[in-house]
Image 1 (cartoon, rainbow, N blue to C red):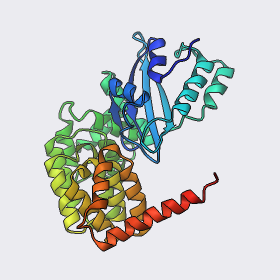
Image 2 (image 1 turned 135 degrees about the vertical axis):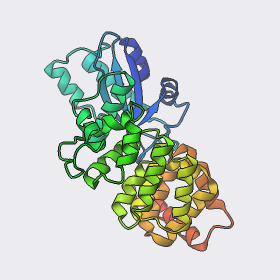
Image 3 (image 1 turned 90 degrees about the vertical axis):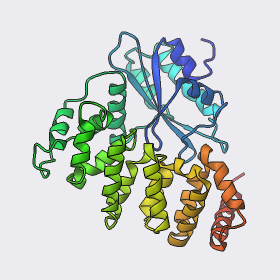
Length: 350
């Protein structure tokens, strides 16, 4: 078999239909066109996390009802581009194990080859549940058996303390189907009643979804009345992740920064999931200034490194570094970060 240069080419060769998703931060769909450009190093990976791309690929044949799933973790270079040697190695392992027929039931030997693939990873259970819900809804398939129980609970037909039979898969199905029937209306009415045991996994599911304005406003109201519960507030902030550039959410975050009401968890949540907020240069500078005045150097370093790795934010970070109006404290924190980076690099074996 001739060399297969990309995963897209391999999927084409097998006659598969497919969809691509990022799983590193939240669940973001990547268009086929963009993924092909990423594979050919024409685009940096848009959602890097710890110098890696964490990708889910759903693929299926036209006559198949259930897609196969691959979870792939590939290293990125300092520019955010795929490490081509790793990409080629991944494809070679798949071809050795399965050939070009990706739909076959693998033999024991083939299964062993696939299990030893160093580029495969297992996502967390909540990410896997959310992805299954998103794929099923996108392919117009039925929700899981847990969905109706979740609708019954959120509708208020049961006592709010009677949450024990509400499954995570049901909550992710509900989040993926906010546009179905009156689900948004039900959630707007329920959100102030939901216990943390339900609200926490629901927030993790809502971070992947585009939300209607009524629900955005209900979540903002819940955040504002949860200021004293640091953990709950950070979880609620996850809900705005896919809607962070909505004016109401931008106003909320501006207020939190101005009022100096961001905890360590909030800084990590906003930088890790709501990075599009920091395409606004002024907001990014205020965020960094607040961080150096309220957090440890370790937290500042971690968040700064995370943001600077995101392609759409990198230029803004560099502008903040060069801003003549930055505080002495911010300048010092950036200097310590780079001194530490240089020292770590010099200690690496050559």
